[in-house]
Amino acid sequence: MLWDFEYFEPVTISEAINLLNRFGAGAKVIAGGTDLLVDMKDEKIRPKFLVSIMKIPQLKYIIEDGGALRIGAATTLAEIEESPIVREKYGLITEAVKALGTVQVRNMATIGGNICNAIPSADLPPALVTLDAQVKIAGINGERTLPLDEFFVGVRKTRMNNELLTEITVRQPPGHSGTAFIKLSRTSEDLAMVNVATRITLNKEGVCQEARIAIGGGVGPTLLRPREAEKILEGKKLDEETIRLAAEISCQKFQCRPTSIRAHPEYKIEAGKALVKRALVKALGRAGGGK
Ligand SMILES: Cc1cc2nc3c(=O)[nH]c(=O)nc-3n(C[C@H](O)[C@H](O)[C@H](O)COP(=O)(O)OP(=O)(O)OC[C@H]3O[C@@H](n4cnc5c(N)ncnc54)[C@H](O)[C@@H]3O)c2cc1C
Image (tube, helix red, strand yellow):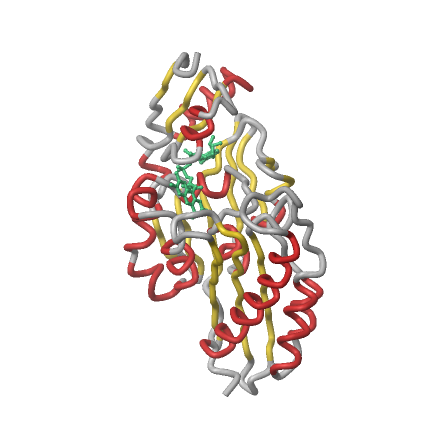
């Protein structure tokens, strides 16, 4: 029966971890519930124990700390959207949050839930990866930190094992950086057919020092970080041809499911190339280059 489960509301991280450890595979963390409750209603999962993390103050914060931004996993997307620090210094995150769902969804949904659900069309992970995000995970055996792009192992699969995601940290983009997030979806509140986040960091001579590209939208079992394309951009003064080539290479390793309900694989590849190109041009312009 759908609603046959026990519900817990711990108020500390250690209490939550102990509950997860006690109930093992039968337990599920619930944050905003905007993904989990849909899956439960569709009877895709039937947890016996739900451990809510929304009453844990230690998981709700946005703090700037030595050139990095730390966000507690249970911070809602609305809280992130309204944060002046995020808007002013980490605008890429605000851009991605605004593209996600509706106001009602963002009022409930959390950053941790968007990551832990591990669907390849989620909007925040590509933006966070281009800001070199790290995630902190806590379990009965202690804490560990992982780069976000190593956290995902497949569709709805992560490296967590009965653990709790507690914090996401991103690096403040260095000076002369520009970022961009672009999402293509059937309707404004739908999941992405393709989403792309980019960061370009220039040196004083206007040469690209660091490039980051991350692509989501079901273009593979996890988001894609085309490092070959990033390498094409790095060390060069970026012109139209270099950007076109990087966009082309970015989409060569797409593994789209032919049965995807949102878009045909060939459409995703063509859309991906156009989106990567647009996002790179936008990021370059915001970095002060490309004039
Ligand atoms: C109408 C609608 C529109 C949507 N549109 C979009 C969209 O445009 N883009 C998009 O990316 N998503 C979209 N979503 C999906 C969803 O809103 C987001 O993925 C959201 O961020 C999930 O967060 P949550 O707090 O609600 O997670 P929950 O539903 O509470 O949890 C999701 C999963 O993560 C696990 N989990 C949550 N927090 C933690 C944690 N701290 N540690 C360990 N495990 C954890 C849960 O066990 C569960 O498996 C939409 C959903 C709806 C209903």
